[in-house]
Image 1 (cartoon, rainbow, N blue to C red):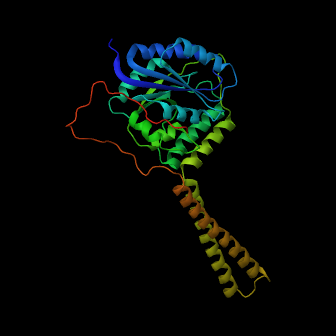
Image 2 (image 1 turned 90 degrees about the horizontal axis):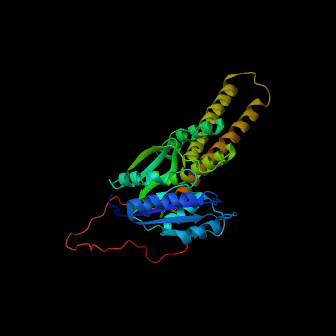
Length: 330
């Protein structure tokens, strides 16, 4: 089999993974070496507190094309992945989690992406073994999230994915602090395809997120990426104003048409109706302005380029290099 000359970067976030690191690196490098002439493996250490540094140093001493990025502290796996995307120089960038994603699928997913697909993402075949509440919460999130975020988030999709250089260049422009690779991959809008796979279990004891962690993550994703909750608040405020207007009209009508009305009922009802009406109006105004401010301050590009072309007068040299110039600290 002839190795492809396409440059492939693999980004893997690490967090106290010293026990599985040697096996993961060995399998990944073996796969890359067998299929590609140019490749790199970026290990992003997210403030590990175990023996990861020693394990990584051993890896660097025995394997080619491995790079290490160590973060000053734990910023979370999403930020660690972003650090890897910022540094990756490949034509195609693979994002994978060391404890569960199979390197053997990399060639197939890269081949799909080379057909003009911006994002090739993995979908786990089942969620067997996860707590029932976590599975139910994930189902609700995937269904409601697509509506609230305005994005198609396929159920059971994972971080395991191949991103074209065009997609990576688009994603790294988004500098939101609350990051989620699965929503960012959909937000940039490039074509996507899925690959179904069975996750590996490199650890004897699987790390699982609690239901509370899952709920916090879901809330953070929705708040960071959608203004729909605020627009719901605007609608609720308008509904309250309309209901109170009808109630005030009813109170006035009773006062004018009925001879015997309990003393003080009209005054008290008008005061309550006016207060709730004012609260509804204020809620509507505040939510509308807050939605506008958040929309303006998300600091995202207004558009992404799908394709660029140039004159065919100048030819491209065969020995062209794929580099990133002027690296900066982010």
